[in-house]
Image (tube, rainbow, N blue to C red):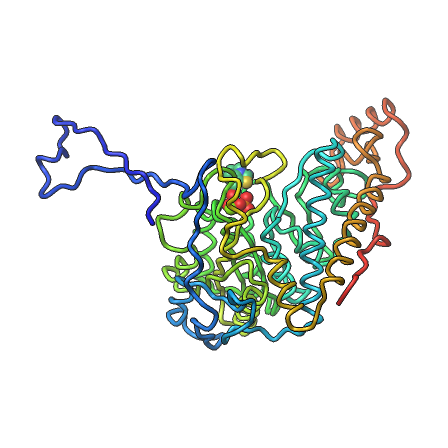
Length: 452
Ligand SMILES: Cc1ncc(C[n+]2csc(CCOP(=O)(O)OP(=O)(O)O)c2C)c(N)n1
Ligand SMILES: [Mg+2]
């Protein structure tokens, strides 16, 4: 279905390019993309027509031309019947799958708690990844811990998998003394040096060329480390996407580049970011392999990641992976999606809900139970609530964020220029005495794993 509206241009007889001067002219038209559904519409998405088993799994060093169908199609492992099938079934055991499920559920409880806290005025801003938890969790689990990751703001699950304590993540959201960015970043701009995760940037897409550059550096230094980067469908319309792909194409460094197509870029539908082809299909123009994957199918995403990471680690170069998913929550706590999309869209998404799908698969295979699922939900709800309370004990906007005054001046110059030193001293004497402690990260509050 072409959802686009066609606007016909006005006839202009005095123009040199008027219809009279052109052989067999079509009406002069501007194609203006539209979203398939808007508030008041009943969404009727077509089911995915691709089935598990439709696409071969080529060797990880196969030429990119062997992946053209994979880039235009949709790789699936979990079928409509909830069973796993086809050559893309990954080598992953039940214990790891339960860990993946737990991490996705942890991310979902984290989001729900942070949104509730934002509504209570206890933090200023949050971005949820509800519905697309697989992208971050399966991705981060497939990479080796020494691989370096460049996420967008919508991959909090990746921080959790890499071991950033939830308390430290909340500290970042509040900007208090347990924020490793020392309150200098906007909320949701997590970074985790110990976990090899590079800081999120506010301008969307900057991480793509940075990630390719980092991968080039690893190849140049002879370090067999792979770099992963994630952007959204809207961001794939930025120049940074193409700059990154071009460098990736020319230099072939070890990286896996992801476009998470969650249908929306705030209120702009993904139809505005591409003239029709899939995002993964763009890889072919750069002579790179592209994989388009059901982004709510944990097994398929893990398998695609494993394939691309192995290719990069073997020296086969970059892969572009498109993850087809749906953003269930608002863009952020500052957004109201009822103004621009049909409220029932999420429930009609043909990819369903990623947590339900993996849970049902595990239950069906005897590796999980309804009771265990309920107990874990309760435990994770309490964990997120306790983490929030713990984070607040390091300072709040109401009680003071606990940063020493001098932290306003530090970390810019190796040697502070004299005028700044003077200003710092002046401010210190005017404000309360400097605190003895600088920023701290509460490692003791490391998340406990309930399963896996
Ligand atoms: C360069 C730049 N332009 C615009 C924005 C404002 N902005 C923030 S998020 C966003 C939408 C991005 O959508 P998408 O890439 O689909 O990612 P999603 O939010 O869906 O994960 C925009 C336009 C920005 N942060 N940076
Ligand atoms: Mg998007």
